[in-house]
Length: 290
Image (cartoon, rainbow, N blue to C red; front, top):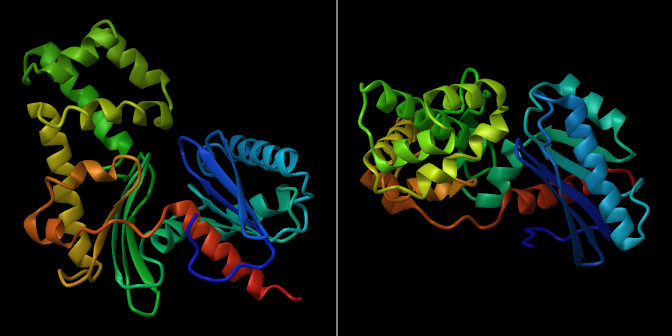
């Protein structure tokens, strides 16, 4: 667990996304971690709260610590308005808590306070560029209905569509499309799955695409995502003298197909979004009255 600033005696950090929630209690320099279910405030507010409460209960049970007064920072997917954040804060069993959308923690985890760019591709996606003062601009991250290009959801959806085109004879039949058609027992099964499944369930199919990068359909889908990132990043102020980090579960899949200037700027993220949430928890705790 990385941290870029000294911590108060105890902190809670949460990284909640569409497919799962990770929590850490940092106490006297020792981390205790827990995992729970999806935590997207916009798509399932009550479900997100249940996941967070379950994770907090696990931390409390494992450590014997009363978490109510521990400063807590929660970076949550779908926390798109201040009102939604305040509602979540009021509903949680924490008295000193800040809820924010998850992009800030992902950027802080990847870059610390340094200038650079982040291409994040998890269940959802976004692009961010941070300046030397730690301020950042973002694009994307608007959810699976109107955005999240190059996300795990977008990748999986494109693969399912390609399998239907293969079944119709209007698109290439490849190992990937045949695998998906077999998995869902034909085109009708693909349609039924996509109709009934939630975004997080669909997003889990992205690994079938990223694991088959040499398949022509898979490579086209990943290359299309890379082209989206390459178009958006410079519009936010990124230049090729700045480092660039790929984050999120499917982020690394783009490392070989990004255009040359972006590919040569790639460097490993300094830490994870949970690390970023922990650093932001420390910032939050220092703002609180003694």
